[in-house]
Image (cartoon, rainbow, N blue to C red; front, top):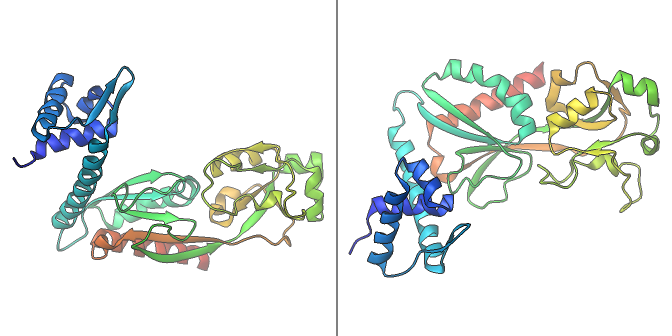
Length: 298
């Protein structure tokens, strides 16, 4: 007996949601209708797909196997649908873009109006996430990442290299003094990212600058957001290293220790092989490249 696509769609929604109720809300079906579809699928396959308990549903081993296949099939179908519906004349359709929250908030989001003015038939979904969404599984179409892609079989283009600069608010520096040497940072309040899901490996270089290896200085505050760190600096809380792409957002802050050696931050434009010929991806990539070049020239 062939598998029923509607039942597989319901199964996938339940597997992702972890409950009949939440899956029903996603599918616009009642809880009982969802439950009946799952029961019918289990009966046709003659295996249980879920362990049912008071806190929700857990996939059985056969359920895990089926869900892996179903996720892949639906991801491929979504990609195929997007390519087939794209206009032959002009780029059109939905483009899901993921970026780190810092770059997305400060640099990318304020420029999207210019992209949409050029390509009005494209709609953009911007997913700001400091972890890497799975492009192969179509969690997003393209990514702008602050490190080379770790997933295999992804097309990558190096976009730009940014430096880091150390900033403080005038009010803080008036009270605490201006550090003259990197070792002077030991006497200052340092704001850093901490260890929660950092968007790149070198984001906390300032706590190690001028220190012995393995003996970083203590940060006064850890914030898992670049824009949060920026606002904390602006409030007069302390000093922090901020990336150059923040540009005008840094106005009003004072740069200190301009001679300090900092790591470089490399940005990459990344997308799956299946979207190599997508017009939406191509024009968005070219737009980002042009905007970065204009900023560098300016």
